[in-house]
Every structure is written in C-alpha cells, then in structure tokens.
Image (cartoon, rainbow, N blue to C red):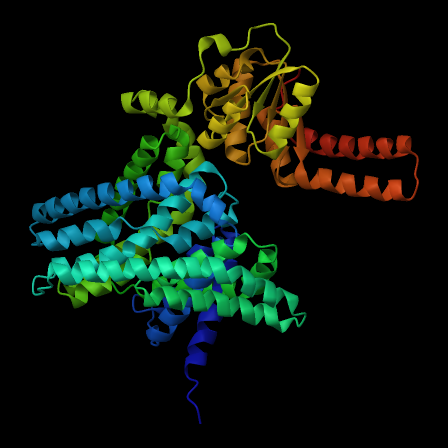
Length: 587
C-alpha cells in the first residue's frame, strides 16, 4: 500500500488558505499575503503541523516555473530586444551597486552592534539581498495590468538579468568559502561550458518550439494542448537546469519563443489552472520556511525595512541613470525592493559552504519573508507615494540634467504658438497614433507626449511632433503645448498617472477639452471626478460596435443605429458623471 500521508498536509494547507483568504478579502488585504500568512501559521513559527517541507518546496518550484512560463507567453523575443538596455545596463548596474552598498552596510551594522561577521559573509549578504522576487513582483504587476507600463518593463528587464545572475552568484560562493580551494582554471572552464550550453539551448528553443506548438495545436484532441503545454514548460526548465541555469529562466525563455506563434493563446489557456494552483503553493512555502522566535522578530523587521528603503533608493537611482522620469523610477524602485526567492537557494548554498552560520541563515529567511509580505502593499501604495516624492526629486541636479538628455528636448522653435488650433495627444500607442493620423489628414495642428524613448526616437525620424516626458510632469505637458491646447486626448494605461495628469492639465489649462481612455468601467467615475470631459471605455465602446454591426446586419436604418449609440453613451456618461458631479468643475 502506498503512503499518501502527504495528502492530509496538502488538504489542511488548502482549507486553511481558503479560510484566511476569505478573511483577508473582507479586510481588503491581497490574497498573496493570505497565502504567506497561511505558511507562517502552519509552519515552525506558528503551530508547526506541516512537516513535509521537501514536498512543499518541490511543488513551490513547479509554481514558479509555470508562472514564468505564462509571463513569457506575454512577451515575444521582439519585446525582449526592446528591453535589452534595461536588461544589460540596468541589470548589471543594479546588481553591482545594490550588492556593494548592502555589503558595506551589513559589515558596518554588525560591527556597530558588536556581532562578529566576516567580510565574506557581508559580501554574500549584499549580493544575496540584491536579487528581487520574480514570482511575487511579476505576479502582482501582472494582476494590476502594469507589466506593459514603463515601470513594469523596467522591473521585468532587471528581473530577467537577476535570474541570469543567479548562476555566477552561485559560482561566486565558492570564492567566499574559507575552506575551499578551487583553481581559477576550473571556474573559467565551468562558466564557459555554461555559456556554450545555454546558447545551444536558446537557439534550439527558437528552432524547435514553434514547430512543436503548431503540431500540438493541429491535433484536435482537447487533452493534447494541456499535456503538450506542460511538456514544453517543464522540459524547457529541465534542459536549462542541465546548463546550470535556473529552472524558471528556462520556462520563461520557452514562453517568449512561443509568444511569437499564433497558437500562444491556446498554450496559455491550457496551463492557467495549473499555474494558479502551484503558484499559490509557492507563496505558502515562503511562510513555511520561516522559523524564528517572537523575541527576535522586531529586530528582523527593522533590518527588513532598512533593506527595503536601501533597495528602493538604489533601484530608483538606476532607473534615473537610464533616463526614466522620477515618478516611473520610484514606481520601479518600490516594485523591486523585496528580496527574491532565489536568495533562499543562495542562502542554503552559502550555509553548506560555511560562508554563513545557522544564525545568519535563519535571520536571512526572516528578513526575506518580511520584505515579501509587505511587497503587495508597497506596490499598491507606490503611485500615491511616487506622486508625492517625484516633484522633490526634480531639485536633484542629477535628475534634472539626466532626464532631458534621454528625452531629446525639442528646440524652442518647434513649440506650438499660442492661439493656434491645437490638440495634445498624451500617449502614443495604437489609439494615439490613430488620433494623430486623423488630425494630420484634417490639417489640425497637434503635438504628442510619450514616455517611451524608442517610440519618440522612431517617430521623430518620421516627422511626428513628438516630445519625451512623463504625463504627470508639468514641464513635459507644457512642451506639448497643453497650456493653449483646445483639446487633450489621453491614451495612457496607468489609471493613477492619468488622474494625476488630468489634475495637472486642469491647473495649466482649465478650458481644455479632455478626452480620456479607460480600460474598465470601474475607472470611469474616478476619471470624471479628476476633471475629464469625456471618458471613453474600451470594453464599453466594443459592445457599442458589436450591437451596431448586428443592427446593420438586420438592415436597421443607419439613423436609428446612431440614435441607439447616442442613447447608450448618454446614459453611461450620465451615470458616471452624476457619481462624480461634486468634483467635476463646471465648464
């Protein structure tokens, strides 16, 4: 008879997790925190009823693999090319600066409290803490639809490099081992073999993965896409692990390769249920690893908060160095402030190699868990905090000098003259480009404000009157002629930034006719309260287009179709403008 005792533990974990999440939802606490709290409650720091940590750790690793595979499906290789500067420059600078800074601070702090620590241990702590949590950060940003925003792309780019950096960091632990004596030749040989094997696997993925996906999609048995998706995901992870790279990185690369195929959505839908289940177990496992006494907890929390502060400042500084505006830099800093799950692996390796002792190991686990727990709240509060802090950063010489150099400040002669019929377009995505095309065709003057430097560079070559800048920055809005624009069209996805932008535009030009795009109906009332004249909802307009096509198919008169469109729009606007009537200024 087989031993299935582990099923009791898994059932208990699931039941407690559901109960805690239900309670946390009533308190408006993110489910991720509930899952981590479940692990703490059932682990050695709580009532200690879950003992099979090896099983939980394995399931958690599967969750990270599936999560990274699903995220990779949302980013093609072309998207990765756009992130190359962030991955290479930003990633390298972030790891080095953060690692060295925390190493120095760790050594100084331990000496200050009369606790002995070796230089090797301090260096290890610095670089182990420089890594952020890919699973938590990308999960939360994905749930908030912020991965495509500038700070989301910064986070993704730096996280990709951090996953790559885990391999050299693991090898570097051999140098820190006081008892090891590994010749330099062996280390160079090991790194060389990893690079050769990794390159071969990557090009193999690029050649074979699309063919495998098309084969799977061509088989009409409904079981095949599910099995095929899991085989591709776990197979890619296993192959990269043979090269010495992380399992999650392999699944992420496989997902990106598949993203360029037409069948990627089918693969994504197949693994979604598995991804959610295993990812939940990962967050629970984070809490299960914690084993500290209540007496030491305030001390560890204080250190964790200090680490969070240091990482926010340093990551924001790296983003500023790359030329991003202060607000975006602060959002990226707060997203990447936590310590990552790969730090657990690094800590276990360092413990086995005698770089750190058991006391430092448990302290590391406590600090890592604390930073993970506060991450959802930090990301949620980041927009408001960034709105307060970003203007103050404008007084720093580094910020004020660096931002324009990357933004390609336009010459004064190109600024639109007052009195000219003029529209300002904020955000140059698909909607912004369509609006610009119509304005150009009708000979109406316009200017564009865009935060993506590559878009600004490419569109300037095409002759577009486009300027680089943040939509919440007063000076950037003035360069786009918002102060005398008759109308402003805002097509930015970040709802918090849009609300802030509307407020700034109203301060500059109270008579401007502001048209705003909203993703969902939930955002409409807040945008009207912020001062928008018209809020166009993507899903709402899609439904209008659908019923218009349907009525047209039934040969309903065009006048009646237009009448129905106006009725629906008027009723929708009436509902939401009434909700925000107290704060919408009369114009």
